[in-house]
Length: 457
Length: 104
Ligand SMILES: Cc1cc2nc3c(=O)[nH]c(=O)nc-3n(C[C@H](O)[C@H](O)[C@H](O)COP(=O)(O)OP(=O)(O)OC[C@H]3O[C@@H](n4cnc5c(N)ncnc54)[C@H](O)[C@@H]3O)c2cc1C
Ligand code: FES
Image 1 (cartoon, rainbow over the protein chains, first blue to last red):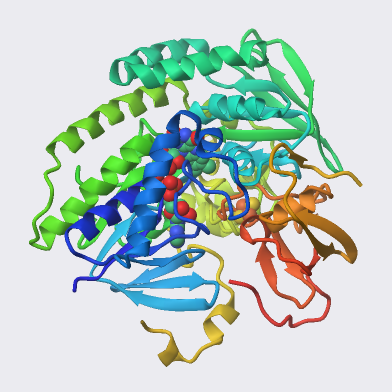
Image 2: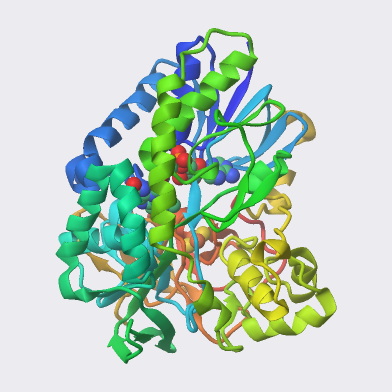
C-alpha cells in the first residue's frame, strides 16, 4: 500500500488523515504532542478534567469533533500514530523521527506537512529575562496546565491572540493589568472592514471580546522596555498613541505579533519559499491544493495562517490532492477551495489591521538582546553588517544570530529588519535563513542506542 | 521562595514529590516539569550567555529555553516532559562529564 506520512496532528493533519483513511489508505501520523489536537485544540494531559466548554469556549464542539475523529481512527487501527515524536530531518523519501525511544527512520511515498505555526516575535529590551513568555505560551499554560504565568500580567504585541488570551485569562481568574496593542486604531479600522465582509460573526466575536477588556486595552502603543531585576520583570515601560510615557508594574510579560508559519521541514523537503508582503514573513510556494514539491503537500498554518477552520479545510484539500496524484478517487474540493479563499480574505484583512511593528524594531537600542538563545545584541548584528553585507545567512555566520537553539524561529524576522534598516534595502532583499537539519536539537545518544539494522522500519 | 506560577484550576489533583537542586518539591499529577518547578520557584536555570535567569519562553517545544538536567546527566525539555514521582532534577548540568546522555 502507498505509504503516506503526515507530520502534525492539529486540525490540518487530522482532517488530512481522515480523508486518506476514508479512501482506504493507512497513513502514519507523527506529532510532538502527547495527545493529538495541535495548538488551538490542545488537550491537557490525562488527569486534568476541565470540560471542553471551559477549555475551548465557543469552539468546544469543533474540538470535541476533531479529537473524536482522530481517536476513532486510532482505535480502529486505521492509522499509525507516533505521539511525543519529532521529525528532525527529511532525506530522500525517509524521515528521521525522534521519539521517547530514540531515533527511527520512517520511509514514505507521499508526505503531508501540517506543522502549524509558532508565535511571531519582535524583541523588546529586557525580553530575555525569566518571566517573559510568548503569547502562545501564556495560552498553553492556561489550557494545558490550568496555570497563569504570573500574578500581575501584561500582554503586549498585536493580532487576534492578544485579545483572545487576555480574555481567556481574565475569565479563568488571572490578573491581566494591561493589554498593549502596537497596532494603531487607524490600521485596525481599515482592516476591520475587510474582516467583517469575509467573516462577520468571527469579527463580531473579536469586537465583543475586545470591548470586554475595557480600559486595560491600549491601541497604538510603542513598547519601550521591560524593566527587570534578578528574578524577572518588575514593570513595562511604554508610550501611548499620543506619545505619553507610562510604566506599568508587573511580574510577567506575554509577547506576540500573530504567528509565523513553521517551515523548517518544508524547507528541508525542497519546497521553495517566497517573501509574503501581507504576512510579512517567508512562506512556502504551493498550488491552491497544497502541492508544493514532488510528492510533498502542505496544509494548515504551516502553509498559510488561516486559523483553525481554514486548517481543517486545507487538510482535506491536501489529502484530495494526494489521492488525485495517486490516481485514486478523491472527494471534490470545489466548495472547500471557495471557503478557503474567503478565509484568505479575512486573514489578509487581519494582517493589515494588526501589522508587524517594523518601526519599533528598527528603532531598538543597540544593547537590546536580539537573539534570546545566545544573548546577541542588536548592536552586535549592526556591527556585523560591514563584514557580512546585507544578507541573512552571511550575517548569521558572522554574528550567530539565528544559529542558536531556536534555529532563528524567534529572531530571524527582527534580525532581517535590523539589517534592512541599517543598509537601506527592503527587508525581503535581506533573504531568508536556510534551514538546516535537525529541526529539533537531537542528542547524539538518540542515534547511538541501537544498531543500524534496528532503526529502519 | 515563592513560585512564578499561579494555579487557577484543577489544583486538587494527587501530589507528586520530586527534587530540584537537592530540595524536595511537590507538584501535581498531570503537571509538566516546568509547571511543577515554577509553581514553587521563580526560574528553571541561569542563562549561559547573560546574567539573567530563564523560565521557558514558548512552552511548545520550539525555543529550547527550558532545558534542565536530571541528576544522572540526562537533559530534558521542561515544558514538554511530564513530571514523574521521584524525579531528581537540576538547574545545571552535573560537573561530572561526560554525562550519560540526553533525553531525546
Ligand atoms: C500557541 C498557539 C495558540 C493558538 N491559539 C489559537 C486560538 O486560541 N484560537 C484560534 O483560532 N487559533 C489559535 N491559534 C492558531 C491555530 O492554532 C491554528 O489556526 C490551527 O491550530 C492550525 O492548525 P494546524 O493543523 O495547521 O497546526 P497546529 O494545530 O499548530 O498543529 C501542528 C502540529 O504539528 C506538530 N509539529 C510541528 N513540527 C513538528 C515536527 N517537526 N515533528 C512532529 N510534529 C511537529 C506540532 O506539535 C503540532 O501538534 C494558535 C496558534 C498557536 C501557535
Ligand atoms: S519553553 Fe520553549 S521549548 Fe520549552
